[in-house]
Each structure stands twice: as C-alpha cells, then as structure tokens.
Image 1 (cartoon, helix red, strand yellow):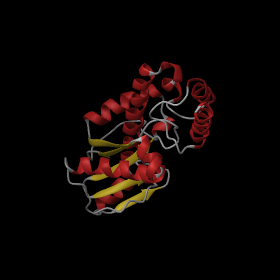
Image 2: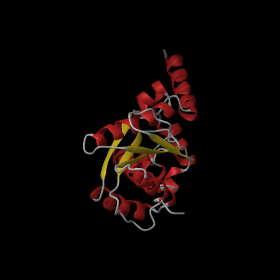
Image 3: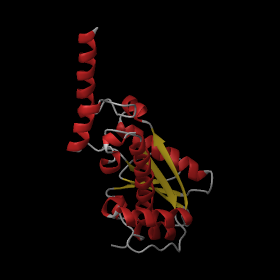
Image 4: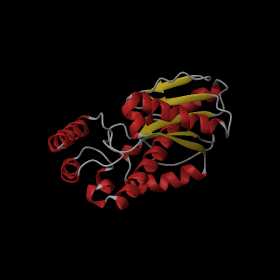
Length: 211
C-alpha cells in the first residue's frame, strides 16, 4: 500500500500542510498517555516507516531521530491522575489536541489525519482506522509518540528498577503485576484500571484493619 495515498489525494485538493496525529500508552497501568502531531514535507522519504508497534526498537529510535530532524512536530501528554478523572479515550483525545495546538504555533495546519480518533477542530479532520499503517504522516506521529513514552518509562526504571518499567513499559504483564503485588503502588499508577484498582482496594483494606 502507498503510505502517501491519503496525503496525495489531499494535496490534489489544495491542502498543503497535512498533520498526522497518534497516541501511545492507552493500555498501560502506569504513566501518561502521550500523543504526537507531525507535518511532513512533501518530499519526505523514509523507507520502511509504518505503525511503530511493527518496528523494532532500534528502527524506531533511528526513525525518531530522522523524523524529528526533518518535520514539524510536537507532543502532548495527559497524566495518570487526569486519565483517572476523564477516562483514557478522552485523555487520548486531549493529548492529541495539545500536540496539534503546539504544531499550529509553528506552521499553518490545513488538514488533520488521525488514527481512528474523531476530533472536532477548526480544520477538516479525517479519522482513519489503523491509520498508523496506512498514512505516512500518522505513522511518523506514532513513532514519535511511542519513543517519547518509552523514554519516560526508561527514566522511571532508573528510579524504581524493582518494577521493571524498561521491560514492560507499564503494560500489565505477569512480571509487572507480580512487582506491584510485592512492592505496592507508587505515584503514577492509573487507579481506575482494573488490576490497579484491585490492589488499591487491598491496600486500603489493609490500612483500615490497622486503624
């Protein structure tokens, strides 16, 4: 499939600065959700670019460096506390809008392509299902969002190595759940997420027994 398909069609219609946006981190139990927005130049080339989840970490890092040096881009994030308040769907949307607003300060945005996320905005928006594998602009955004969030998890791993963030990136793996059960919850967990909510309940029950 031609990853420029959507962009080329929009160029023909007279749209010049097409932004793609995607998010990383809907499923993890820990940390923020991160979104990126990217506007690529019309002559942008990067062989092999696709949905960031399909790329090796080494490739993602290489692509991240190239994309950030050869595009207009920005990131937005919503904290775990706010995810608990407004839900992950709304938080993902908010992070995307934050990234779009930051890009808009750098360049005029004519059109926005999103990875299946409907957004009300002042310019036309096209949500594309599995857009990160169908649009080069969304694919670029997915790489920036994923690498940005993974780097945050590496920083957390330095602070709390016993939790294994560098391996699971906050997702609910068996080892991650074992670590939470053993060491307890730290700031940054999404308390409304099922496995965390159960552990929080147990912790609260333990406290109430002592008091």
